[in-house]
Length: 125
Image (cartoon, rainbow, N blue to C red; front, side, top):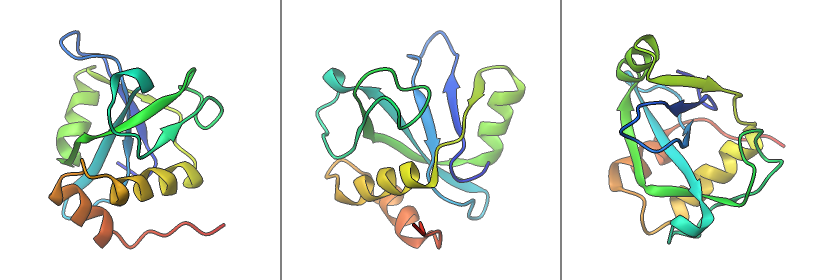
């Protein structure tokens, strides 16, 4: 898994949302957060609009309360099982926006916030 990778979960028991990898791997773990429709999310910390990523067709928000520090190995296993499918990687600018929103959001879990803060990646304009 690489910072900026995106994927969708095709498990019929879960809604179809785009997930973003928001950190460099650290000890085999990465932070992932998902996108949801703007009307389905109370956290307004990070609005994503059409044109910021090809998957986005209407105003959407990052749902930070569902973010997690996930084992990259588990994500790769879900790909191998056909549960996850890759989508176009996010731009550096979009990843920087998502990471900044995570640090602003009151809904970001402590482990996610700490992993983003400790990730050495920076966005250079």
